[in-house]
Length: 164
Image 1 (spheres, rainbow, N blue to C red):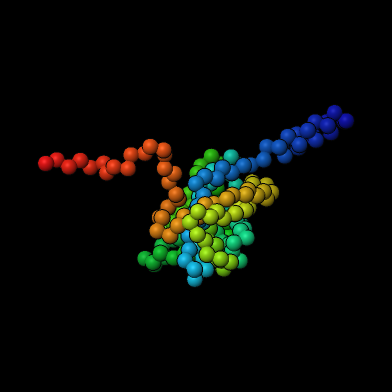
Image 2 (cartoon, helix red, strand yellow):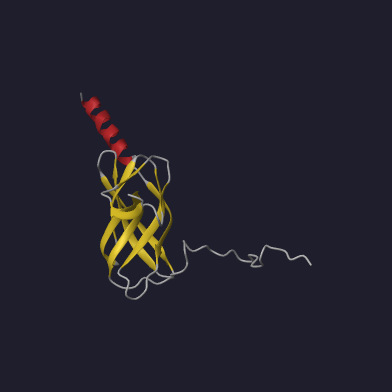
């Protein structure tokens, strides 16, 4: 009986160590102007096992929500969703015009070059919550997408050749 109990405890303990992880890539936040009180955060999420993004927190915003853009009667509408299911091993992209994180009631403007701390709150298949901290760089207004790092010595010449 004692061996069975020890084996059961070891199995439970081993299961606890096999925690779901989520790979977060290319996180960024859109910069704002002085009077703007909302912005979006974007990233790619790839979980090791099925998981669900259930909340996001950030000290730069009074309210943080998970949103989706969806066509409704031929009109693109943005709405809050209670969570976002993430399939094991598959990348889900949070991007402009799709799923994204809304940062609302901003406490100050977000300027290019800064970074925004985000706490992503996930649930695994057993409804156990776990968090992941992310520092998302702010892309200056007009920057369009996540900043592209320049490689040293990158060729800045136009690729078109002019023939005379």
